[in-house]
Amino acid sequence: MIIDKLTRKIAATGNPIVVGLDTAPQYLGDYEILKGNKYATAMAVFEFNASIIDAIKDIVPAVKVQIAYYEAMGTAGMKAFADTVKFAKKAGLVVIADAKRNDIGATAKQYADAFFGGDFDSDFVTVNGYLGTDGIKPFLGNNKKGIFVLVKTSNPSGGELQDMKLENGRTVYEQMATLVKEWGADSRGRCGFSNVGAVVGATYPEQARQLRKLMPHTFFLVPGYGAQGGGADDAVAGFDAKGRGGIVNSSRGIICAYLQDKYKGMDPASAARAAVIDMSEDIAGALQRR
Amino acid sequence: MIIDKLTRKIAATGNPIVVGLDTAPQYLGDYEILKGNKYATAMAVFEFNASIIDAIKDIVPAVKVQIAYYEAMGTAGMKAFADTVKFAKKAGLVVIADAKRNDIGATAKQYADAFFGGDFDSDFVTVNGYLGTDGIKPFLGNNKKGIFVLVKTSNPSGGELQDMKLENGRTVYEQMATLVKEWGADSRGRCGFSNVGAVVGATYPEQARQLRKLMPHTFFLVPGYGAQGGGADDAVAGFDAKGRGGIVNSSRGIICAYLQDKYKGMDPASAARAAVIDMSEDIAGALQRR
Image (cartoon, rainbow over the protein chains, first blue to last red):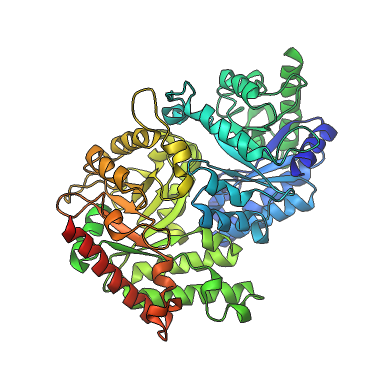
């Protein structure tokens, strides 16, 4: 079960942290020189990612690669995405492809093939459940692979649909949560959590606490810490009583740490490592305060 | 306004039909020979698409390229996707990238950059609105580009979430429809429809009729005709009183027509053209019966 691998690595590193490789070319120091050449730019993005991965691979369990940043670079970017995923897996990290894919059954099968094998082979992929069960099924049934389904997203307008109250008393996101529970019922690992996880934003801690009660065996991928405004206490709000059940993402806060005053003078990789260590203390503190 | 271009081309061809290039390598005659070589396979997929496009470009207004089939082929597939989009645009067709993308604002901006410019530059892209306004905004504001937002999808389980009744009396898909109306309010073309369209499946004609009333200025992209079970009368259920306001997609029914008994002995491109002409009569008949 891939969820057992993830939770084991969290325990081994002591860090329920995932580093988001949302690497926009603009983050690269030599962007102004590179930007005329898309192949050189995409290669530089991969090399930047590789340096970050090498600097953090012994202290975090996982990376999350946000595919939108690579798609924006076209075919050269997709090669950089593939290379990044491969490099991270070779480094021993659990790889989450953040793709939020969704479609009808036959097409969802193509997406499952895309992310669970071949050039983009990842351990987890994020998916959007708006199309219901037949769009999710193609991602299930392989114990070595898992998904995170969007439940309560971290962005300000997420609630426009997700927070709407249903006649049955639930909100839309709670309804999605009950679907996610069903989808994950057959793939629970020894760690107690399922290969079918949920995306629950750090920016809505109250809802995260409530979702933890609603779905005790669902592992949470928590975006929204740091740059998006979620604090450490908010980020761990959906963790369980033992301080388990979630992994907190930080993207710009880590990969762009070298641009912060705090890490001034450090190269991007060293700054990323220092920022992970600081985040680790921040999260650990929040878990102790609970 | 891109929606004016699309409606003009529909009027010029007399066909509110979009051909879906969901080209799985398995559909190719020489798949067994090709399958060991992913570059040759992806190139063959592009060449297959090019032959279809050449055969239909004078009788249909648009193609829809389902990116999942290309992602499943990895980086070589993404090149075939880029080449297909470029070839279709050069042939004068309106190109819909069927990608159902969705993310928080900053990331949605990356997706907008990916599909509205660069290697994957398309006229329309399909998106999923589960994250609300800030995930949609980056796709708005460019009159030469449009989106189709998932409202009521064609698949059997689409209703699990979409059909749930809200406290306000609306269903979830109607609530999505009201958001789609708002998103499209500022980009209405001379044709009366907005650059922000809706995906409304042919398999739910009752809901399509109701959505037409709810969103009179929203153009519908209608999947689900043919292989998925929607008939011509169902497919045009959401069209307006003048027989406008929608475009019906067929994918396998066209590109795999050469495998049907009806078109036996024809090459894929000729069979596709014949199938488009048959579909055209089918849709026209349904529009006359209304």
